[in-house]
Image (cartoon, rainbow, N blue to C red; front, side, top):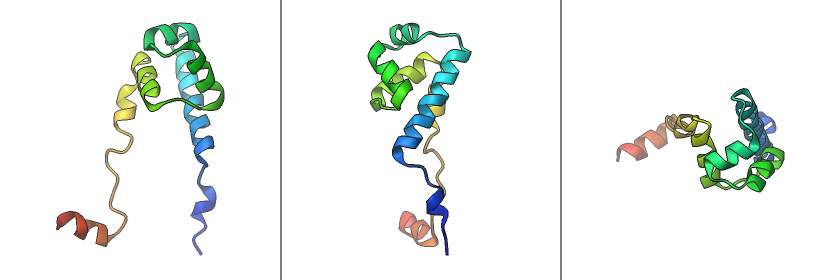
Amino acid sequence: MNLSFLKQKTPAETARLLSSRIRDIRKRKKVSQIKLSEKSGVSLGSVKRFEQSGEISLLSLIKIAIALDISDQLECLFEDIPPASIEEIIRENN
């Protein structure tokens, strides 16, 4: 029996993990939330909410990534997903 689905994170867990990583990057680069807000054009309230809860729009996340010079990481997210089955390969080639 395949129980790998039990290891999957919920969307909220994934959002909090991403926000934690970005907060850590911001702090490592010695950028305050206020400075990140100014540099990214994302409101200070949205930056704070994102870091606390993981909630943010995709556009604001992209702006923050650009401001922190990590947008290349976003561009690679779904770049090279291998086919899940031989049937998928066949469908792609037809």
